[in-house]
Amino acid sequence: MQTDVSIHYSPFIIYYKYKMPTYVPSFYMPSEWQRELQLAIDNPLFLLKLLKLPPPLNLLPQSAFNLRVPRGYVARMRQGDPNDPLLRQVLPLLDETVEMPQFSIDPLNEQAVQTVTGLLHKYHGRVLLVTTKACAIHCRYCFRRHYSYQPLSISTVIEAIRADTSIQEVILSGGDPLTLTDNRLAELAHQLATIPQIQRLRVHTRLPIVLPERVNSDLLTWLTGTRLQPVIVVHANHPNELNHQVNQALHSLIDAGITVLNQTVLLRGVNDQASILIQLSEALFSQRVLPYYLHLLDRVQGTAHFEVPLTQATQILEQMRCALPGYLVPQMVREIAGMAYKQPIISS
Ligand SMILES: *Cc1c(COP(=O)(O)O)cnc(C)c1O
Ligand code: SF4
Image 1 (cartoon, helix red, strand yellow):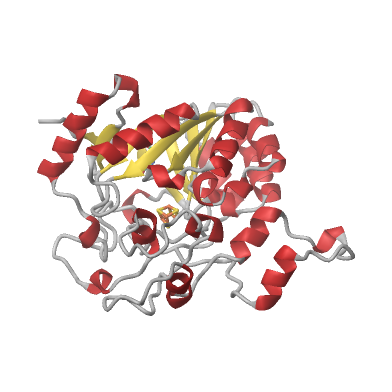
Image 2: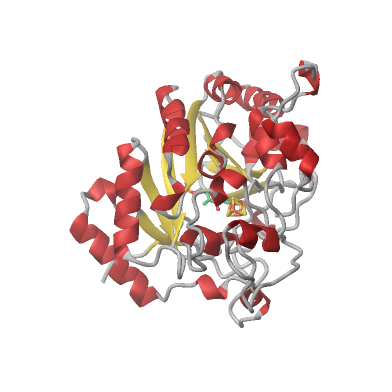
């Protein structure tokens, strides 16, 4: 995802953040999460410097899908460790330029399931709305990193959903839908709630994990403020991604009555060990979040170095089943274009 909201790191912004002048009129003030987003790091050399690491030889200095990582997420990385599992998710490497035969720009054939611009109707009863191209973090393995984002017409989308009485659930996705302002999201939720057949509003977002400041009272207000039943699916890949602030954000969502689930992508060098994923399930559930999906990597160009072989994946799943109660074992799935649901992987 490219970003709508990139403001380059500058000493002024640092000053602005830490020494907020009291005379700034309130209508000029972005909310806390927006300031954190503006402060996100986009320079790989600067990131490495913060982590006290020399630039690796295989660093990819420039990419169309540039480095982007919030400072609060960087603070959870270990200094001086080039293999830190959080760093590996965001640092652009030359491996991304290697073309692999089975890896393509749109392996899920998402263009084909687009009914109107931004609306993906792949599965029965639910539609996915690609709301924005912006994300707070650029995950190198992102399955929509090559997605061709077109401007969305909300009224067209609403009318298309209204016309299909088989749809009960709308999923806001992107990019990250929570990079949109609460005013826009409130308007969208309100309009969706006018469609009688819609029962549930689901939000797929990584923001509560990577930028927990995003979970504020305005967000809770619109998300719980319609007749639609709210569900949030967050995206955490490693137990080190959870800290006190993230836990607080998750509590706020759950205490407001929102069902919170987690999805994880199985990633080589990040979380390809049962012990890590067991710890992740336990850490999530200690905050009352249930594991939902453990996705095998989608074969998107530039991500092959993150792929975990299927035999290893099934072994990991088997070890998780041996160690955890059934409700803490996420469904391991792989998405295959044209199938009626995400395909479960059964452990050997
Ligand atoms: C993953 C996905 C969904 C949601 O599927 P669930 O199995 O309900 O979580 C819906 N639409 C599209 C296009 C998807 O890729
Ligand atoms: S947050 Fe999600 S959509 Fe955004 S870059 Fe990461 S994986 Fe992709």
